Image 1 (tube, rainbow, N blue to C red):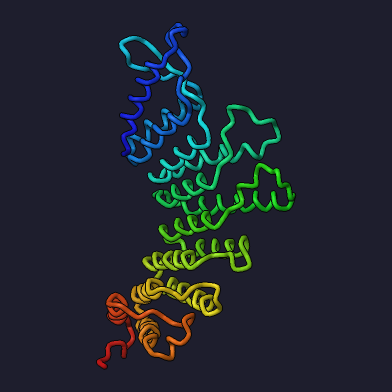
Image 2 (image 1 turned 180 degrees about the vertical axis):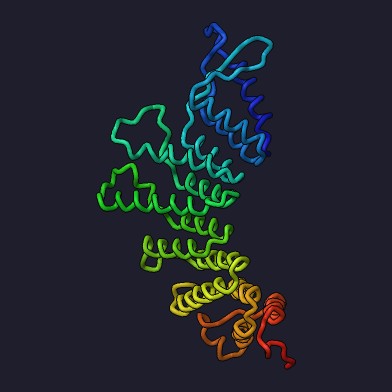
Length: 338
């Protein structure tokens, strides 16, 4: 329910009740395990509020540094919380991801990644190595961040993961502690979500290429990944509509070719409408009308015979976008009555 403060108050009362009578003095070790404290962090994260985020960070830091937490019982009493585990770190990163706190997420994930790069013997106080969920939350933090350089930092993290993963692969060390850092399909898609939201078409296409190289043999980007890259160009169109239209059309043709070859499923109407919207913003009436015609002929039996070549039927939005393209066009013959 996101009631982190209430949950923490209840936890501290339980700590007080479980206090061993043999323990004398104002400070005692926790009687509860780390899972109980992780539930508090999760509760703060569910609330997704800045004030709850501060409470989550305060609790996490107390766990990390074994700083005694005061329990208000009418007398001075403090409890030393347990050390955080991977769930604790993942919960805090989840908080950062939801609130777009990219700098904080980046700092925490870097501290976790640095453990596997050292040659010294791991210490008990070292942070755990990040899991896939940790990287996803960090990518979400970049996606939801208002920092202008957030997309560049997301791409840098992805490249770093690829470099570490490739290094581990070259060494062919099955026991390597770096083995879980090789980016999987989910991480690439979350990186593409970041580029889509921030309108970074160039970076989105670069990630598609990285995706293809990392996962060849039909295991590369799916239709969702390509759609995210297309939407990234849609947002670029707000600044440079002509260039965005040219690059988006090229990507769309690539998607159609992959679909006709069986590497992607038939394109959905949303992808057609995205390209129509890009054409509309650029005032490219002729291209918009040609794309609409492609949708209209999909109704014929000739097109329906081959499912992989079949385009979806247009909807009202499709026609509205073509009208918008015509209204913004500078072509002399763009407005005609048929």
